[in-house]
Amino acid sequence: MYESSSELAENKLLMLYVLKSIKNPISNTQLTEIILENNFINYFTFQQYLSELEESKFVEYHDVNDKKLLILTEKGDNVLSLFKDRISPSKMSTINDYIKEKIESIKKELTIHSDYTLGANDSFIVNLKAVENDSLLMELKLSVPSKNQATSICAKWKENPSEIYTNIISLLIN
Image 1 (cartoon, rainbow, N blue to C red):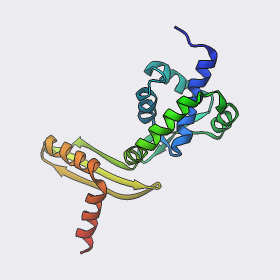
Image 2 (cartoon, helix red, strand yellow):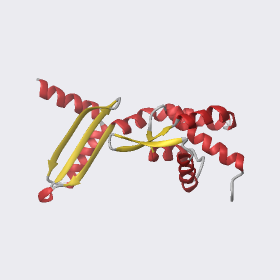
Image 3 (cartoon, rainbow, N blue to C red):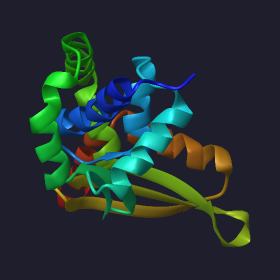
Image 4 (cartoon, helix red, strand yellow):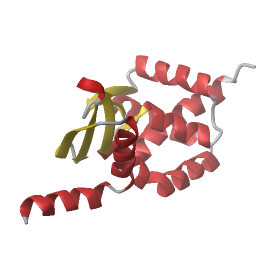
């Protein structure tokens, strides 16, 4: 039922390794997805470890563009470099392969934002945002009459933000 202390240490180091390998702040959800999709740790144990890593100041949350994102602290990086050899090479290889495959979608999730809220007169306010290197490229708020339109706009924005951005800019410039 309980893990050995070496397994516990390896799992926490693995979490730190993921944060270092991605080289960008990521959301709790994204880190959870990486760990769970690779069947390293169960959800509840993962959240407990993450909380312990935060208490130890090995990771911390930063507010970036209205999102709480996790970063590896200098203290966490130092611990990782001292004990990295305790992570099994097969797990490190699995993480490296996963990140290579998914890095673009992870970055896209962090740079593209879309949501909607209920506005006045039963309308919906759609908020679309594109961020690159911590700089706001575009933020667009619009009112639409139905929830279907709001969800459709959000989905299209997430699906192809660069084309939509380019079209909007060219419409405004030309």
